Image (tube, rainbow, N blue to C red; front, side, top):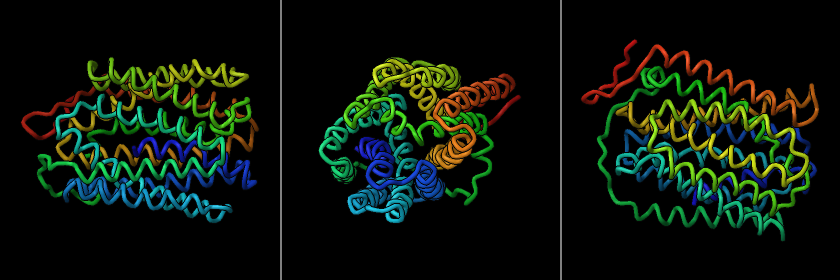
Length: 364
């Protein structure tokens, strides 16, 4: 439910901003970066709190506040109010992912299956929101708020799960160092990818997509993720998954500039589904299998994703200012995905990480 709500809002906020409120592309990048900045701070703070306090409390509080804040999109009619609401959305939405991931792992849920539920939410959520947006763009945000309300209601029924409260440093340096190769790979790839996603709904709109067809594109990606997450991600080792995700990301981003209409972009979404399914689940498996402080490690991963959401819009604004158009941003993402793969391969060629009787050790 939370995934359905957040992707729906992410997809239709830029279209609301440009087409209904007359906000420029550059200011849209500022707004997207603001959302990601507040989310980055929140995931860093609450990922740690999920290891210190009851994870169910963190999950429930995050979902409740996100539901309330997302509903404020219905009242956003200017750049100033929309920016303020998105800052609040980002902070609230960053509260629960780390604790939720750790809760799922400790409830013996495989990470591929866990991520599958999120991808399924992205798929059906954007379809419902896209249909609603065809009547009025604000209806998409009403649908998103309803999804989150359902998610909060389901969180109230979560049973207690095994959890050992632990002391975690305010700045968990050792946790970061232990997972540095994955964090760096995700940061480089996803920052350049987020440069694309910043203006992605506008790109789809400009090649002929109406609100519902844009939803179909997003849903195709999500459905592909579900298929690949269910079929392969729990069968492969985490670092192999990350490597596959980085290489297929480079291929996918190269595809985008050559699409001239909304139909031609659809096949690329299947490959994008493979890329994200393998990279994201690989990273989730890595940080949950190789760390005792799983909420902190998962929270840091979500912080890296949010930080990418800060860097990406800046990259998009700079590239768009120098070379107007979408293609330069997409080719830049291709190059960064290949760089990320190269660095990840070099690091893991000489290192291996094991979890032995609790503590994590690194050998060279």
